[in-house]
Amino acid sequence: MRGERADLSAVEERFASFKHTEASLYFGSGYAANLSVMETFINRQDVVLSDEHNHASIVDGIRLSRAKRIKFDHCDIDDLARRLRAVPEGTQRFVITESLFSMDGDFAPLADYAELCRETGAILIVDEAHAVGIYGDRGSGYIEQTGTEDDVFVSINTAGKAMGVAGAFVSGPAWAVDYLIQSARPFIFSTGPVPAIASALDASLSVIHSEPERRQRVQRLSRNLRDMLLDRDIATGHSKSQIIPIILGDNRRATAVARELQNEGFDVRAIRPPAVPVGTARLRVSINSELEESTLERFSAAVQRCRETTLCSAVSS
Image 1: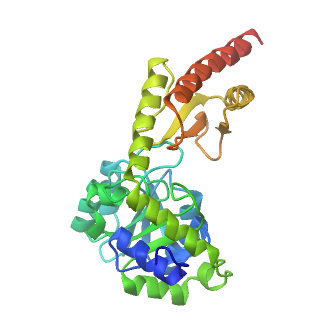
Image 2: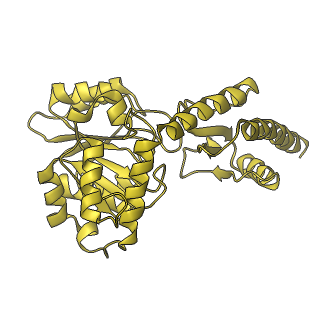
Image 3: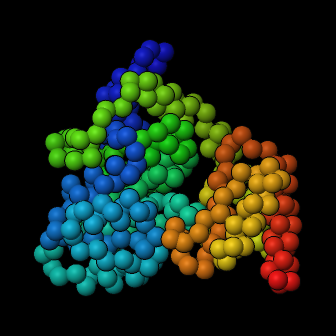
């Protein structure tokens, strides 16, 4: 396939092999993929246990399923276990989480979740949007890195983040993918992707396979930036990944710091409620492999300077 024009069906097969699953299905967006998974496999009589920080597409998909949704505390295995075991026997239960959370940059304890689901018979669904292409020996994601491939029913893998293209793959058993093809409304009633997308996806998978140094560099740069920020007493929450939140708390302050940094040439955006909880407005930084250490040094110094400037302005006003 490489060196020739790629076919989307062949790319889906290649992605399934990449994820060590039987099959994969490509969707035009991660949002459509999550809606499809939730409304297709979950029924109104089921119970869904969902991390309180799960992405809006997961939440909306659960709503479409009409199942009962129980939020559990963010990445809290004890709270999940307590709530899961309180669900009446005989009820089909789903545990749904992101593997790497998009606003906090922290990881779900997937190995613990997998063990709990084995013990209770719950079904585990994982959104790998921000982990695919970066984590695991093959770069297939955090499921691979935690050795939980046999415990996850299906995963949702966005191709517009580290893969640098667009859309998303749902990966899992062949019967589940076939069921999505026959039943998922966002898939059935959406226009198919343009043929060129297959070649771009194929090329991305080739880069992930042949250039592991890219993801290694991303992880190294991310550790270094977190250390630089922490050395300047700048809070980065519980981030352990390439997603680094700079928690500022106040909405206006986050906006002001972002504006100052943009004026200095850094493309940084302020994230405010409802995208994040009230009182946790932040800058959201995402590291890529093309950045230089010197840029990170300049950025961390600029954050410190802009943060102090806006704090002084707030006090004087």
